[in-house]
Image (cartoon, rainbow, N blue to C red; front, side):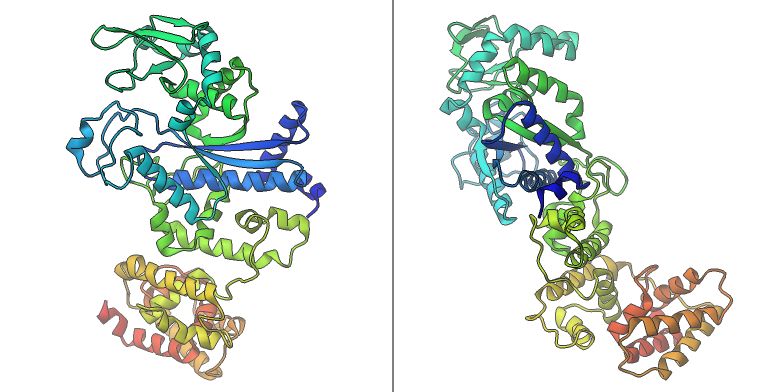
Length: 529
């Protein structure tokens, strides 16, 4: 691909890549490492937001590499905020009583309730890495605890002590009057109890690199700001991390947008230019409400992958990231089919259009050649008509429709068949609701029966079949032919919508479709339901 084409590509990852390149040019950086960052709160399991942030950032990283022709070395670092104090015990964890004894302790000090790792934080970090590894992401993992304790943050923490008043001038106007009286950007780790303390500083000695404070009992302590003896409040920590790690690009959800100027000001106070930032919209549930981990009202990554390939989830994250989208089970089939359409179109496009194609970004610039000759919506309707509870039933139809196709020769098709069966069993079959045809619909279906019986029983041309379906509908006085197609699905499949009926009949088979219509007209389908 030409870097010139990347200069004009309109896909949002290229737009962000160009903004990042503009920032580097302004700083006079023509080579060297470029750092992309994502953050993770390990108080809970990795979730849809974690996946979305890493996959989208990876897309920008790949677009930047294309744009710059590999002139820069790039790194994606995933930082776990595992030094945060445990403010409450998550409801979904075992050993609740034991964990409650460690409130306010850093997550990497809290014992692992599962008994498999050094601490709760280590356990969640391992889960995060396994999660990211399962998707093949290229990244470097960094623990906030290790960064603070190893000295990686020491220079910036000393600078923060030196610039303490400047940081306070940024933070205090953002707080309420009561909070202003007790606020400090430094959170000392109590030398005796190990608690992360939210207490005001009595003094900050920049020259000595120490802070002095009273704990909850009124006892005074002085500790170094270095070596993991303190951590920063999350807003100053955001900006400090950018400065310490040399972050060049970071994206975050809209819930961070109001604080982004604070992060940037902190970064500048500490002597670093803030990274290029991208704000994405948050996912909503089917009621249009913000998805919350505590409510459990969202669709999880694991749930999505039970019914669709990973690439379809990447596609859903790629599309319009600045637009709020509902995330629930009903969006899955459409996402699969839209992804497959883009993948099928890729090989026939010129290079400029390929850079706009979502499949280029989903597959890091190298999409696979295999596409599915049958879309997911059709697969679902095939599963519905056949009441399929395994892929063997599906392949009885697929093998006739796609010459020479087997699960071995068409693994993607086999994968989609398995997803369709699972989705049908869990969502379609429980909701199937057949109805009897009206007199007009019955007449049209009888006409369609005659037309299908006149066709070759091996007819597989969807357009030929669709023409007959249209003609049967036109033979009656439907005000809108959409009502005719809706009737076919409600009467024959017990659902209100589906793909082109001609395509469905081509895969299901003319003889089988004839039997389906005859059964419906005889009342057999309605009786079963």
